[in-house]
Length: 242
Image 1 (tube, rainbow, N blue to C red):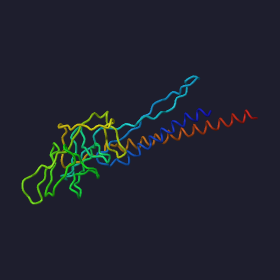
Image 2: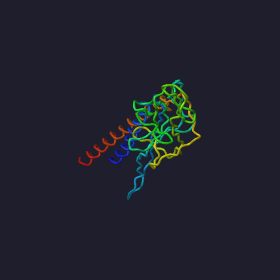
Image 3: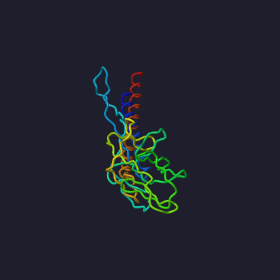
Image 4: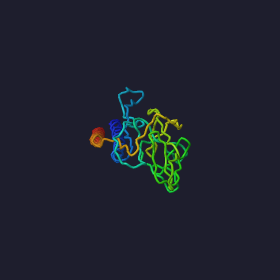
């Protein structure tokens, strides 16, 4: 009976890990540009000298839902949304690059274009913005300003827009996407932006709630199976000892 306990325990462990993923999705339902995650599991047949009749749940690396979210108009010049496929590029603390659909850009006190504290990358590196009266971002990612003292518009940089193969992307601990082999994606001139808009999360709260409820029931069932197996094992021991 102890073997049945381990089988049920593997199912309970999967339910717990899956619940964490769906809880994180729900927590980010209102996060700009967030991409929902999903769990992956497969049946794993135990190998041994006996008949291979025992199958456990084996966790696989989670996946990401790359479907687009709804666009909302903000009218803010530093808000941008990707039209169709593609990503903005930001710098990572390790000196690499990461990719995101979030587009609520800001200019920090040092004059650098940033996104949630990370430097936004341009075709030639980080983008520095001089004092300006007005700022605009074109469809191709060109960043232009009207100087603080007035005058003609000046181009100060161009956002690095990329469109790598989605199958090669993986999420890091900050929720940003990176190429799984650690390389950097090439700029893609076909990626277009919509200024004054932001893309919302692609999380469907109703689906996430239903999945969480289903996983809760599954976890409770696995726990009952473990309790039942333990009870049967104790009764068997009593019969043998009696």
